[in-house]
Image: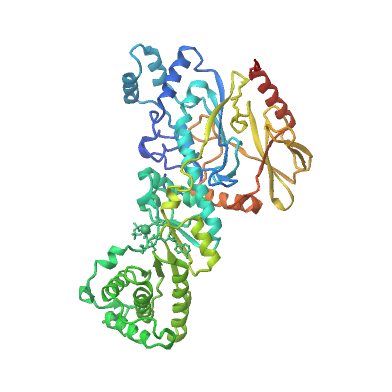
Length: 567
Ligand SMILES: Nc1ncnc2c1ncn2[C@@H]1O[C@H](COP(=O)(O)OP(=O)(O)OP(=O)(O)O)[C@@H](O)[C@H]1O
Ligand SMILES: O=P(O)(O)OC[C@H]1O[C@H](OP(=O)(O)OP(=O)(O)O)[C@H](O)[C@@H]1O
Ligand SMILES: O=C(O)c1cccnc1
Ligand SMILES: [Mg+2]
């Protein structure tokens, strides 16, 4: 997918061998093929085919049962990739040749002929918009069509939605703790679970609320802003000022500062003698100063220095200030510093104190508000702790904990058959959280006063949709005593049709650009009551069914559950 700012099914869909005329490019990762599935999908497909059930009309729901990270909400992501997969679903001759080697030799050749002609044109997919805030038990996607092909979509849909939604949710939670004004950079590629983990994490962390990524390929693929500083290696690669091949720097006004190195050294001496900084430092590390000067020469308009290679307070910060003052004299404004170890709260406050003192002493307007970036194993709890202590960090670089979803490594979306040949199906379990809600139904979000979401209501397809201003009984799907009347101010149907078999995208909802999904996520989070969103012990959000759907579920349940015998 190209960096598309304005949405719509993607007109750039010719990469990776997509059909001409299709507005749906193949999935981003070329490994997402018809064979990227569990073997049992193939064996079931054969058994369905043998039993003559392969074309039976079926309905599957894709849902999760518990929000991740101990929270109450999940950000739904991965839908675009699912639709691109469905639109391009085919077994190639090479796929079929391989399948012949893994299925028993008794497999009838007609099955392979059937697979050779199979695609997902007979499938219909309704779904909640990607980027939406979603809740347990509400099916995120409803996949309808011939049994065999709908079944074959299970594993890929789950793998495309589970990690995407997990990362997007993780990002949204980090954003919630950091606050809306901080800049959040995703730094995770090196720690991600492989290249797809890294690329996916960059994409969905952006969707969930991060501002930029260090991952250049993700920038190219998805139009995410790319940002970066430099590593310790750059600093330690310099041994002394003698390593600098060039002493000059072009000034912003086009003239030339012939000896920028001496200018900076002069600033450092001046700084040491400044009363506001008196006693702050003695000798700073000269090789670090050389590295900073060199980086400033390469990026005079974007100078940002990693200040913790030797000693943040005694060397990194003063060296940075000296170079930043030199740049200021040449007409440039330095961007700031990055802290990557030690007590980030304390160091950021010291840095701010220094920058403010320098602004006053050197009369450089704006110097006091120079940026402070922090990184080093940051997670939700660290952000929370930093907030409590008070800090002066304005940008966080977050890698490992964000992209690996360290706090919870998987989201448990499942894909369940809820109807076949017009007959509702239920999956029973001793654990009521695992009982599926049978039949075709669609979700609505009911909003109360001030536009706050009150409840998600599942309504049977054969029932009229809820209407604003009309009082409706909302019941817990399984617990008889839990019910409430709701008279919504506004009713939002959550499903939209995203795939109806037509590769030109006519008559279906377009797939919005990533920036629009990010905005959707932000707005939906803003419409939720804050107690549902808080990190610790959030208030449960109600997911209900209509009275009719409740009775339908319970009748079917009684019908399907065997009566026990006590001996
Ligand atoms: N003020 C703070 N409050 C709470 N946690 C903090 C604070 N400052 C930093 N942290 C976190 O504490 C941890 C410190 O990491 P660690 O113990 O590895 O030390 P380090 O600073 O990385 O040491 P080293 O100098 O060896 O690299 C990091 O996860 C960091 O995000
Ligand atoms: O800590 P994360 O949230 O994963 O963020 C990314 C980390 O990657 C970089 O260095 P790296 O950890 O590779 O080396 P260093 O910390 O030893 O400098 C960076 O300096 C961060 O520390
Ligand atoms: O640009 C950075 O500072 C960066 C990028 C990746 C990982 N750690 C830091
Ligand atoms: Mg590190």
